[in-house]
Structure formats: C-alpha cells, structure tokens
Image 1: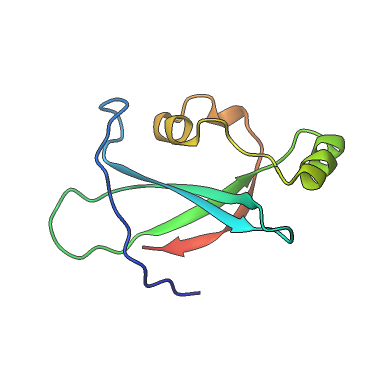
Image 2: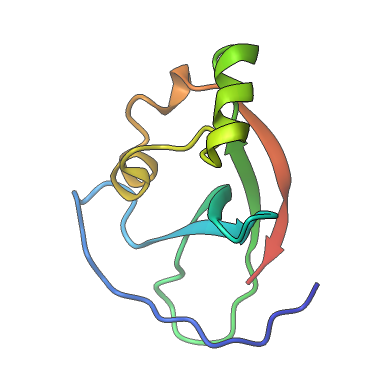
Amino acid sequence: MVWNFPFEIVYRSYGIFGWPQLVLTFTSRDFWGRDVICGYGVTNVPTQPGNHVRYVNIFAPVSSSMLSDFLGFVAGKPAEYMQPNELLSKNEGREVTRVQPAGTVKI
C-alpha cells in the first residue's frame, strides 16, 4: 500500500543515546469504528542532508494470555504499550515484552 501523505518530524530528546529517531505508531479502525493499535516501529533519522530510504520493521505487542487477548478483543483494546514513545526510544524494558511481526514500511 502506498501512502503519499506528508508526515511531520518533531525533534525531542529523552536522552542523547540513539538520537534522532523516528518512532512510528500505527492505528486502524475496527468494525465498531474504534481506533486500535496495529503496530509500532523505530528507525534512526539520517543526520546527513539528501534523499534517504529507510525500511522499518513493524511489530505489535502480544497479550500475555489467551484470556487477556479475548477480553482485549471484546473491549476493543488489544495489547499496546502504555507510553510507546518513551519505551521505544529508550529501548529499556522492551526486551521482556512479547511481540509479533506486523509488516514493513518504506520511508
């Protein structure tokens, strides 16, 4: 799928490590019109001027049990990170979460 929408980059730092980064959050609408999280992705932004192409692997968190997965489906809230920008930009605590691949995005 090709999206030809402009996107905006805001430079904000939680720390010097890994900066500048582009943190992506993807949402979609379910059958009832609610916004649900589809996936997340992180890539470094090139610091050199010019045209650059980046391929970002998108991943989605997985629920800890089948019961919480079912309750999340019923409530329209599947597994998601509470503070995704901070968690994904720092990479601390991310190694203990279970994720599944959700595709690739070309930027």
